[in-house]
Length: 633
Image (tube, rainbow, N blue to C red; front, side):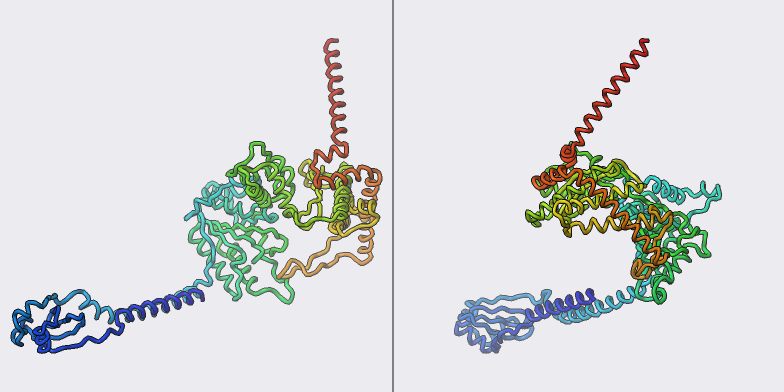
């Protein structure tokens, strides 16, 4: 439609230009008087003629008053001879300027040709544009079933080419994928051992962990054509279009074999069949059926490997996940502290960093961050440095960008009243004090009552070491920490505010997981997780319980028991250390932000640490002296 409008506007402009040209050449000229040769002879005798221009047989006359006229002379007779024959005196004729101009010039033949041919050219161009538009529409109709896959590898994109060296962490995943690339490069050594080429590789992991980045690295490493597309490009309004596009994609890949196909967001087309309400989606199911046939149908001798990525493997059709289709499932985990440091180094490579920058500390403060989150942290730190007119990115910029990514930007315009500020200070002080009093929790990194995002204040914690598993006591300590703000408000002000709503929701969800998922309650080692009802347009419409109403009541009692136990733990700590709670809250009201070192000084943790170090040194000295004495003895 846009192309058609552009063509119409172009044609209108051409017509306007043509009309301007025609109006220029065919404008109405004023009429020129025509005189006879006899009258001309008489005017010359009366000395009224200033100039006569002869062009062939045409005469252009200019009188003394600058008026003009035209006339014609006799053919094949010179003008002077004609004038003498008509009685012009020779003396009078010599006083008149007579010029002779050669007949001809380009306009004599060009003007008629131009005005005859130009309209035909304009109309010809007009019809050519119309036919071109019609042809384009027909071509688009035929290309509707073509796969919209981008080709990398053979034609290449050197500017954006990356390799496995540019991907930090994910060691096991890279090893698996290197093997796939090696199989395509040198299949002979695998075939000698009777090894069969894998049909498909499924990359599974949370969003931002690096699935698409790994696929780009494969494209950079492999010396074979690499076709990249998305699952959503196959699903169209018309039934059969997606299946045709799948066929076209695999046909193109087979022609260029050995080759790789990467389908991002596989769940868009690979959802479980027959799970929707009122039947399945015909177009999506036909597309999935065609994909299943292409991956493992009658044709098995094709050197085409399909690589797909998804963060929702639980909703994929079982037929896709069986051996012979997706033979390998590679799970990509969130990076640990060492991998996070490597990711930060890669993203900070071409940025001006401060000499005292410690990326290890940044990695320690970002547990649970994906590769995309860390890239965002580095980018936000660079933006903060520019905003402050700095020449380099400092540690302060990195630490501030972490908070911005976690909670959102500072809301400096959101000024708390004196009462709200006091409530926020005691609330955050309650979280921090309970957390620091329990050995199972992570150390406090920062406490602040400056609004960020939707939070009026926040308490940041960072783990001492990477953990994959948690114990029941650690969960209870986390719940007590969450309820620390609620308890502090209740002890100090005798009532609670809406500020504890998010903490209560998190604590309740955690307590329910302890009972239903982890089997950590008195109900025993039983899982009471609900079965999710899956539909086409979303993950679930509702939940189907696999337990009775009596068991549901028991679960509620156990959840309530965990919540009360965590609340009692938090309340006991806060009442015992009430003066310390007041001290932390007052410091927060004054400074608005407390860093780790200052907080540890407030609670006396540094003094205890120093005493412990001194005691260990004394023990070490005693052991040394005993060893010396034994040696002498």
